[in-house]
Picture 1 (cartoon, rainbow, N blue to C red):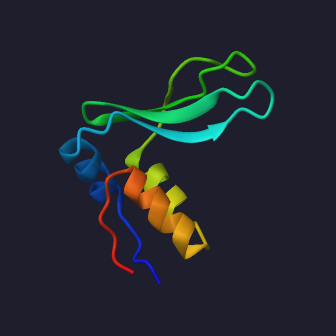
Picture 2: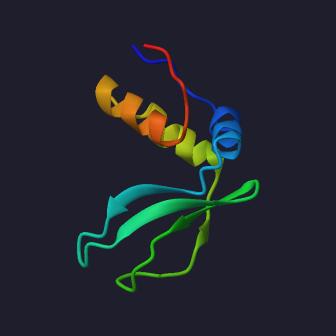
Picture 3: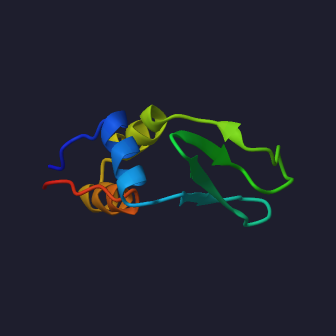
Length: 90
């Protein structure tokens, strides 16, 4: 089992590893890759395409941590955590 991560761990890891964007999913209509964007200590969700709203939406490191922690497949959870620069234990 992979340990759960906290919002603080996600924040610290993204800053320490200079991670400014992490892919989330592709739009089911146009295929644009949505992603989280970090600007300093603030994080946004970028829907990117015009199929919905294209403006950056305020998000939170807590939502990212929840997204990682909700994964039920340990391999997926590990890979997702690593995309945010987290060194998680199995």
